[in-house]
Length: 272
Image 1 (spheres, rainbow, N blue to C red):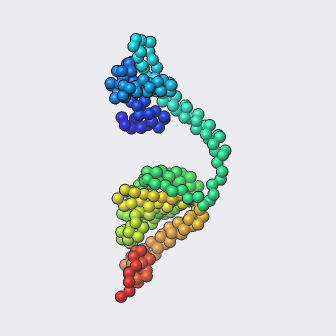
Image 2 (image 1 turned 90 degrees about the vertical axis):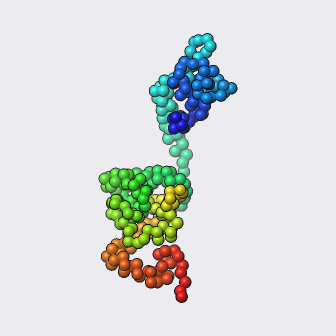
């Protein structure tokens, strides 16, 4: 029921209005006093709440003594709300967008919360016209894969770097399994995730390994797009070189050199 109330509240209903309307759907017609007892809406507020519902056209009175209340059928209410909001969106699309100035290329949008970040990523995937570059970990990979597959079917070229033991392919795929995962995780303090589209827009995100926190930036700033693209290009090439020469040989190269160890792990060690 909380979910139902939450959705109604998104359309301008207060919590008490939600309780009263749903209570009427189950029990109408009833008096305000009876409705208060059945729904938990305080008796001191029930008539104010019913008045607001009547103003919304969601509740009507029936000719009786004492006065009883009955709801607009749920189907009719939904149709009315849909029509009102569609009209509002049509108006805003016509009038609000005309006021929108071109955004500067270097605007950086900051985004928090994992669900919001994933939603923004999926939106970016849908807007790509020719090329997608992705560097990602689980569970984000699984959340993006369906949309990525659809874009591949649309003819969009996809290049991906996937971290962890993931039996998934997304376009031209490099599995970043040639180095211990905890090295990258510790160096970036999380799961660094990058999505770039058409060499013109990038999102850089970091998800905590335990799923407790996440942040991201999204921008069309050419400098940040370039840095992100170069990062992924070099990651892919390093991975392919490691495959060709063998991970043991490549790892021994940086593990035997303190400066390279610092570059790879982010940890500065001292020469003895």
